[in-house]
Length: 211
Image (cartoon, rainbow, N blue to C red):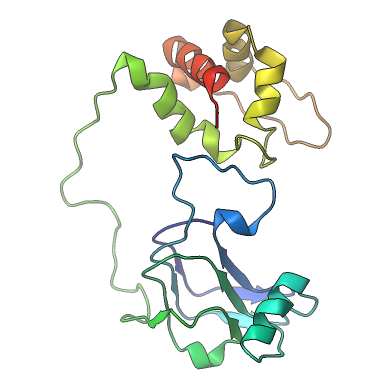
């Protein structure tokens, strides 16, 4: 979902009701954050050599509708729904696909020759101004589990704001030493490694968010 520069290669993907691989944007799922600072489309996704077995055998109505538009009736291996760009697929004839008409043919078959994805020259550490410390920590850490107005791995930012609306110190303390409060959510790991200054800054930023 909205992931960029992903290579899907050398997997055995089997027994998934909806599809083997779903490549979608934020608007394709309910209750996902409409954070204006996020780019909602998946770009530069490459589907290479994978083994697909028994996928899409009970797919959802939305995908059936897409298949109808393409005059297809199949159990989909690969489904794409987005306005993303730069995506490609290798050996497309081996897959049962929906929505990949704008995918190009990948110009590489595998990543065997790639030894490392590290840069030849490391990027210098970024100097983060005190005024943007909370925002950077939120985007780099918190947003992976918390969307603004919907459920991801953890509760929404709106829920957190309701609980701690006038208590950033309490939120910072909880982020450093969380305890499990909800049976239907996984336990949050401690983020104490961020340090007291960053914890306070991110707590204040989270409580100030308006989408």
